[in-house]
Length: 375
Image (cartoon, rainbow, N blue to C red):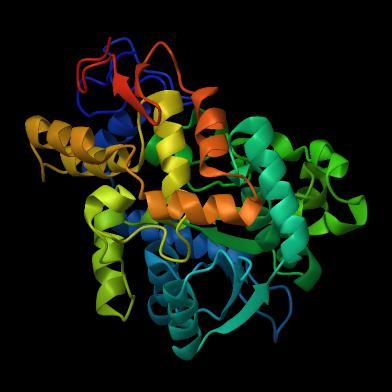
């Protein structure tokens, strides 16, 4: 395990690759932003919207996938108020046992600001069974649910004949997930190859629920994208000030309700992520035990690149908060998928990376690596 020379990105991130100087792709991309002509890039955005926009006189200009969180709130308001477009918002919702009151209030507040919004809620029992199977089999409960979250928007685009989809950050450029790289910095049609979607195969789900219940989880095939001329664009590519913190600040000023739990419970010192449910933080904890980094690493890396933190301050934050998750969230998750907390930790123990961690107790592990230095 080695770290990027300029930020705290480890080379254990799936699909990343450091250059000869030991610098990660996200840092190299950030270096290029100093030379960007942002007026020219805005003109490029206008051209793309013109080329891929509405097909009918009375239709929507684009689709935006939203959760009511910081990124989707800012995107929706930018598209409507700055670009003057008429978007359709699409929200794939969680079951009642998973969605938070805060999440319901935030999506309601976004609708109240004048957006047409389509809410998609896959059958709760199928959702629960697939989530349980995902966790027991892959130690990743998000493997099924994220298929639905990512698939809902392009499926709606095809059904409603709205070819343009607005997405947020480019994982290849802004996180370093090179598997999603498209033909240009704004091109998101290779999103299907990110670690979560992995090409869209859901044949394993057919062992859990009938295939007739799986439409919400089927990410459209590349031929369907071509047939319906669907184009995903990354809006973050066109924004000089795109970041987790800035999106959170903007959206909070526009009414976003954020978390007030202690950072040690949620692994987030700002409280602006995973607002619509409580279990994504738990998945970040699992990711940390698999790969040696979690949510706070992404926060810190953005701030390091922008000069908001020193490397020492970033290391301190990562050491304190990466991998944190409240026991209460773990317990509620276990109740939902019908396992005991002891069973949960037994399963987690099978996926902990032994090269990076050693057991420190029945439910805890100690780092073998030094944050910022590696192994």
